[in-house]
Amino acid sequence: MPPAPDPLALRCENLHRYLGGGEGRVHVLRGVSFAARRGEVCAIVGPSGCGKSTLLYQLGLLDRPDDGQIWINGEQMSGADDGLRTAARSRHVGFVFQFHFLLLEFTALENVMLPMRKLGRLAPAAMEARATELLTAVGLGDKVRRAAAHLSGGEQQRVAVARALANEPSAILADEPTGNLDAKNSDLVFELLTSLARRNGQAVVMVTHNPEMAARCDAVRPMRDGQFIP
Image (cartoon, rainbow, N blue to C red; front, top):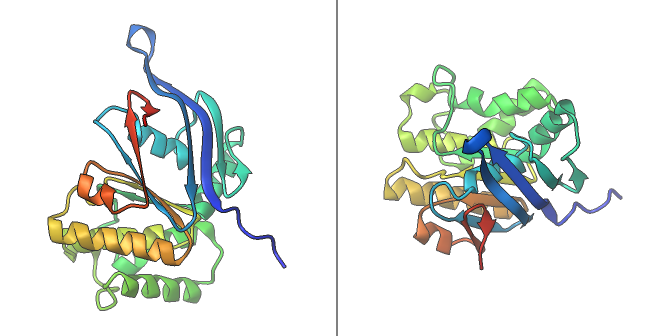
């Protein structure tokens, strides 16, 4: 039997990140340690500029720390080369951003299939079947062939949720995923994202300024000045 997956989808220890240079150099992350457990939803909250999004980009291997260690699915990534980091990101991390970043001329189905094509793990028919299943799960089963440009803002973000889940990642990283939506669509997207991830045993790490949404998560980690605070 294969070994059981690490219960921690991702974690980091003592992350430091500086931005800028000279007199304008800013210590954005100041020795941050964090862990995300499968099947749980964690909200990271705090004022603008406190380091929340910077931490998310570090955890998702979109940026490198100046110091500290990162593990994804039990694999140490901080010293890995760009090829290994890109492969790990494709396999283990799904992203949902405030702006959906869909290819508007592509259909909903094609947008969800993009990460699967990049990973190259499934045959074309299997990719299409999985994308259709995910779009059905987010309530868009009747719009799989519709161009993203012809979907509403709420529908586009639901496609982004399906796309984030496409490769069955260990962790979903969401940066203000409902920031551009009205209350009804915000609630729908939050419920879809968290319920699907919990069902599949994935960790969700969500940056949000919405206190009501944060209160519905399993854990809330406040940040200030580049550090977690009690």
